[in-house]
Image 1 (tube, rainbow, N blue to C red):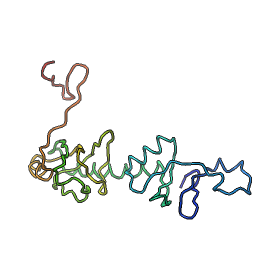
Image 2 (cartoon, rainbow, N blue to C red):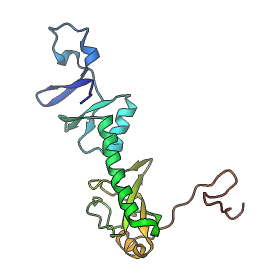
Image 3 (cartoon, one colour):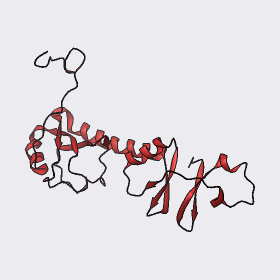
Image 4 (cartoon, rainbow, N blue to C red):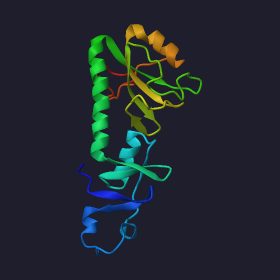
Length: 197
């Protein structure tokens, strides 16, 4: 819906894309495989942020989705944003349901953590904890159920105080409050001056 072109395939193999605007001046006797242009492709296993990155890097509003070179679908920037909104809305509802009794904490997943190589859905995060986001190298990941946790991931979680011991046991690491950003005067958002300022 609303995609201004189409992938071109030979059998099931992606050969490129054509756009509606690009087809208009062409002669009708040419084959699509002759006029298709190379296109950025998203793989079926890419995360949402990877798909959005491909679209942004190529200034594209859509891209074919491939699995081992075979076309399996098309994704648009609208699809990605819709999925992000849905995932974020679910987290917001869960955090609101917990009330103000919790706090934001973070934890780094070490290689020894039992959660490494498990999906978010299978991670066994305690009931009074919401995984808000995952920071992996230079990107932030919305924690959908199919996202696989990796060693080195930094997890941002909203947790009730009573759930912290169970969370630390599940992660096999100590959780810590996130570092608050400082303003130009060396104060946190709460207004407290940091030591040495």
